[in-house]
Image (cartoon, rainbow, N blue to C red):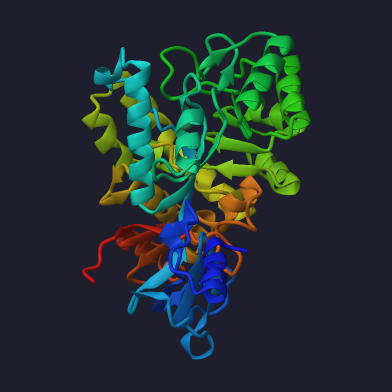
Length: 425
Ligand SMILES: [Zn+2]
């Protein structure tokens, strides 16, 4: 039973007034979002003039106003003319991102970094992103940030994290380990800290100062062991990849997901489709919208050249992956709220999926229920149905008809708590 219902029951039975029930006292009343339209992710018609009831942190009812009664004591939030959609989910985020050129961040203290990461988490939530997956952070700060948010000390998105990314010495990642035994230990260390994913840098990266993006530095034994140990601990594994060869072997070893995929062959995409392997494109990082950001942080010419060189082939890979029907979950690799072509990196990423061949409805799914499926939490978040956590955004139009509607986010609720409301009420 929810805290709100407990309070109501207590009030009825005791005639009492003061009942403390921390920490949910802020949600003592049912909240009713009324008059808006609720988007449908399964291809059905949206619910127009809807009532959506939130009790505690969950949605308890969604339906047309005519058949969905609003409790007399409910707090009413008027949503006339708005479209309600699930909170967005961004599956490739580094809260502590520090790319070449971001000189001001070198020698950043651990304490300063923790504050910057928390600030970035809060800005992510404000931008409408209610769940993020972290794909490589430093020194365990991500676990502290997650704990502070989960405990209610600070507002922020729901965080799933891979902890530190593992890589052979000199590879694209943070925690350098060599040999199968060291990989096993590295994976176990992340699991011990609370990671639910493992991130492996299985090929080179754009931001590396040496080596080829298509390099495949893992030995077979290292890759096999890392994936096996992660799976034995109930963790999923994702690989940063720009190398068909490295991807091929990781796929054979049962990797669950690939990041970026700058170069995927048609054969590899077919295998991914057959196995249900996930693809998180991060297409924004190689397209022109990201230049704005790279210039802002003063990225050096060699970095801009590497970015431009992968942009074209990355775009072709995304189009082929969509055509092949590969599972795609949205991830930006820029801060979720980072300005990109007049909107945020998260929204731009979804728009680019539509430009590359998805319908708007598919792109919306890639930003909501598909990441939830990938994380294994699709009965909790990613949709607006009774029983789901109340992670909700409000827009000016139906994003399932035109994904660009995501540019108009004006309201954000996470777990029943309104964290942003631009409307003058
Ligand atoms: Zn990344």
